[in-house]
Amino acid sequence: MGMPPLASGPHGTDALRPLLDTVLDALRAGTAARGGPLPAGGPGAVAARTAEAAGEILPDRGDPEALRVLVTALAEGAADPAHPLCAAHLHTPPLAVAAAADLAASVLNPSLDSWDQAPAASTLEALVIGALAPETGAADAVVTTGGTESNQLAVLLARERHGAGLRLVHGAGAHHSLPRAAWLLGLPEPVVVPAPAGTLDPAALDEALTQVPGPHLVAATAGTTDAGLIDPLPEIAGRCAAHGARLHVDAAYGAGLLFSDRHRARLAGLEAADTVALDLHKLGWQPIPAGLLTVTDADDLAALHHRADYLNADDDTEAGLPDLLGRSPRTSRRPDVLKTAVTLKTLGRAGLGALVDTVCALAQEFAGLVETHPGFELHAPPTISTVLFRPAGAPDDAVAAVRRTLLHTGRAVLGRARADGRLWLKATLLNPHTRPDDLAALLTLVEGQVPR
Image (cartoon, rainbow, N blue to C red; front, side, top):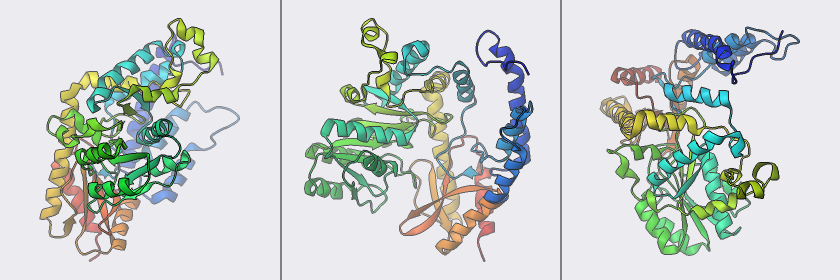
C-alpha cells in the first residue's frame, strides 16, 4: 500500500471526491437498514451488531472497505435527529449547508491557537463574534464547545473578577454544569434557590442574596433542559443590581429566540447579564459543537490571557500577529465558526427566525393534540419547543416503561423529565420538517404502549 492521500493540498479534492460518494452511499444504506428513529433491540443488541460489523479495529493489515463498513454501521446504529419521531433531547438535525461547511473546516484543519495556523479562520471567528455578541447586548464573546463549557467559563470569569469566596446562586432547575463548575473551580457550595413553578423565584433570590454573604454570581436560565422554561429575567436582573450581584444567563437553549421577531421579546432582560451562554447546535441547527459565551465587559476576558512563546511571543504580538491563545482556555481549537458563519450568511436573520418560529409552532400544535386527547395529560403550554405530557392516571413506573419500550423497539425517541413531583414524557421538537401527521403518529405510538 502506498502513502495514503491527504484531504487538503493540491490533490486533496481529487482524493476526497470518491470517498464522499462512499460516505453518502453508506449513510443512505445505514439509514435504510435502521428504518426508524433509533436502532431496535436495545443497548446489547446494538452493541453486538456494531461490534460484528466493525470487526477488528486495529488489524495487522488495513481494510480498504473500512470507511464504507464503519459509516454504514454508525448510521444503522444512530439516533437520527432528522427523523420526526426522534424528539427526546436538545439535539438538532444539522442543516445540510452547515454540515458541508464543517467538511471544509475538517479538510483545511486550522487550529485557532495561533494566527499562523488559522489566518482566515481567526478573522471569521472575529466576524461571527461581532455579529452575535451584540444580540445579547454584549461587547465581546469567546467560542466554546457548547453550554457546559460556556457555563464553566462564566463561573471562572466571575471568580477571577470577584475572588475565590464567590458564591454561585442558581435556581433549582439550573443546568447541572453550573454547580459542577463551582466544584471544579473550588468554590463554596452553591446556593440553590427554590423554583416552585419551574423558574427561579425572584423573591426567594432576594432573600438568598440578603442572607448569604457575597460576592455573588447569580445564574438564571433562558430555556431549562427539562421543560424549556425561561426565568423572569427582568426581575432577576433588578434583584442582582440591587444587591451588586453579577448575573450570568444560561441561554444555551433559548438564545435562538433572538433570531425570531415573533419570540425575541421572551428574552427581555437578557441584555442586563454580565455573561450569556449560547448554544447553536440547539436552536441554530449546527453540527456539534457550536457554543458561545458573550461578555458585557470585554476586560473580563483578560483572565484568559496566557503566554506560550511558540504561539504568542511578545515580539510577534508587538509586530502585529494577533494573539489567539487568550480567546479560550483550550489550545487546539477547530474552526467551528466556519459552519456558523456560512449558516448566518446563507439563511440570514429571516431564515433562522423562520426555523425558530416553525418548531415553536410545532410544539404548540403537539400540546394542543395532547390537551384534547382524553388519554393524556399536558403539563403546561410550551414556552419554546418542549412539551411535557403523560398518560392520564398512569403511575410513574408505567410512564418510564412506555418510554423504554419505544426506545427498545426503535419506534420513537422521547425524553423524560420530573416536574411537580411526577415523571413526564418529554417531546423536544427541533426538526422544522416535522409534519402535523408526524405529531399525531407520535401520540398514537405512545398511546399504544400504555397498559390497559
